[in-house]
Length: 404
Image 1 (cartoon, rainbow, N blue to C red):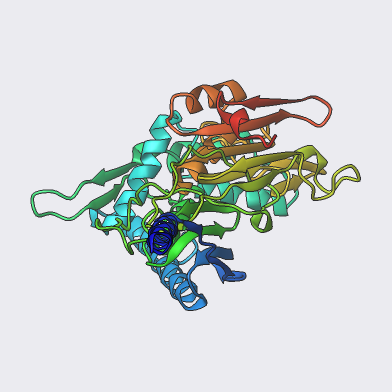
Image 2: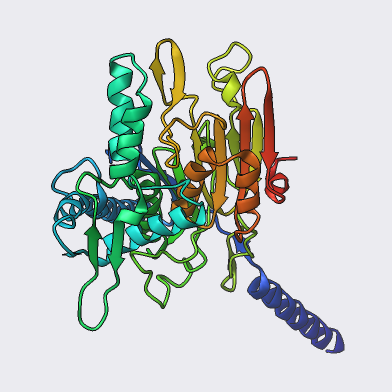
């Protein structure tokens, strides 16, 4: 009898311990990976990689992101004469013209970066860009007088004035130079990538994602995926913190980024998902298409979160009389910015990385690094000089992300 009672007590204790172990056990869930494939948008390609509970959820998220891209393009497409940007630019030369909240936001950010970089970033360069393109086709260099004429009449954010919405009046745009046009490509593509990523991120069942628009890349680990969309709405014009996720299959040859560290994802009882580390290759601009390193990477970063943009003159350039000139112009002089063949910027949003990469291509390397050091959660690597005499500059936190 005593033995029977003892065995029952022992069995009861074993069952209790087993139930406790089972209830406290957490398994690591691995969401499936889905790819949108290459989608032609904005005169370039869009690619999205998503980690989700199902293909249906992933496709719904992609559809939502594509809709956001198309909607934004109708507002800020420089090359579409029917876009809000194109129509508002012409109307604003006659008088203050009503503009949407989204157009106001992207123009305000453009002027902000113009001021932050002491005019190294400038959205009013179309006339100067056209001059160099036309001269390139004719295999001629622009004359000093041609450049001076355009600089004095058609370039400068001082000709552009934004009127903030207030007292019941909508946001408005005024332009005081009849020949001035606006080109916000150097910030808009990054901003549209942010908008697309925000759409992916707020979808329930999406755990991580990447948006790549022509090399402007923003990714995230979705901390709210366990409970569905976040309680607070994500602003369509100023996306909240966007974090970045890359994997080996989504490496872009001339991209890199150094995001801020992200805390672990929250876990439900019995279910965890670990944040991923992903690798990004960074190419040496002087070895592009060379026998030493054809389409290979000279550096590799191991990262989790952030956005990245790279600007350079080694793939896009103008050729005049046998010499290559950067397609990036210095807004302060009207001449090509050839000192920095490659600039890679990491920032919390792709819009920030996009604008800063362009500006740092214009500034001297030391000016660029000094600027980056003043900006939170932002890093950069600048490769300057020539193949025979090059130098690499990195901000203080950039090396933290080099793969070991």
